[in-house]
Length: 460
Image (cartoon, rainbow, N blue to C red; front, side, top):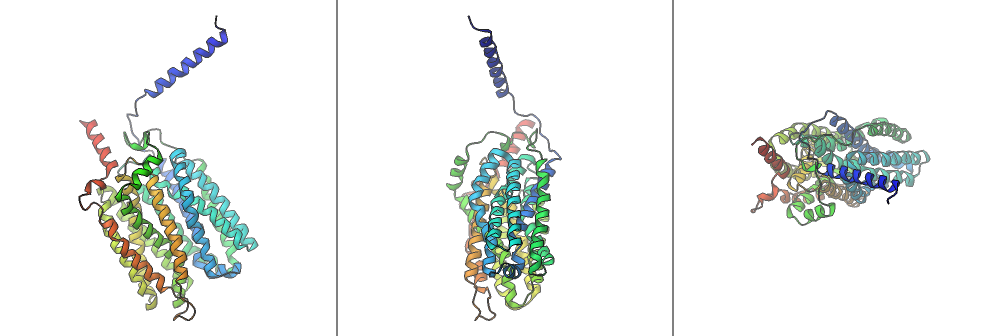
């Protein structure tokens, strides 16, 4: 005869089993809703992307002051930016896994932790004038970057509908270069000499710390999906299977290679802009304004183009327009510094910024769309890793190509600018060939089409 305890445990097990069966058999949500709180999470992503990028580039516009303060050369100071770019690559794998398993909020919290460690370690290095400690701090900041830079596509897929996803991705993504713009302008204003650098890093750290606090209160996921039957609220195949799909498809490389190159161009160009212009007599402030125009014009262009592309689904057409403009702008900059015309430099920087900012969020959303149902964080993560790796590599190569003191003017970087122009025109044909040669079916907006088909069935 069974003991009372055994009977009780058996009944409990039965209740649990019945509850599990009931939960499994529950239908998918029959309602969808766009929550206002989605803007809170998006604002948090914007804040963190700004401060991470600002930390990355904070020494670039005052590289001569930083070299004097730490008792080293400007070439060594470049490693503060290079370290952030290279640290991104290995951590990007962990960031992709975090986004898939922990969601956007989990990834954001990891970013905050790594950012705070890196920021305050860097400040400790500045107070002790230790190049090594500052570099370690920069590496931790680089570790934090993929957790927030890869987040916009996943967050927009989870919280926004098909009419606003590209815009949400653009806002979250373009906050990263906005931080670089703030660094280009504000850092030279705060650090007017080597002795102000330590306080400047302290001020940036205070901003970064304050920006991390709201992450504790942002929502994890919506109760109801933004659209019915969206992929992002249903079970998916493994990340490895998704990875295999990407690397065995030609279109992935036609997007990955030019994206990596042009993001790398932008990163290295932003990092070295002061050193590119200073041999021709341009001041740190003029270099800072040129760097700010890269971002300012880009933000305005993206604010105009992204909602239009979101509305009319003109992703591929816009990519085909922006790529040749961007390649031509980088090549034309070869002649800008020797002209000694700051106006020409400002104009070309504006064109580079406008084309770059219009392009980046469109490519990230486009690659998610055409490879649906691959997890929305995977392809953007690989693209960003390629861009950061290319940026770090190009910064080293451009520094090596810097001409010596016997050149006229000394330390000029014309060979580096020529390299960017040649590489730009070399990779430009790749994205222009998307959808050609009988492969138009490979560039369809699959996620959006699936949503429209589902809505048509429901209405029918």
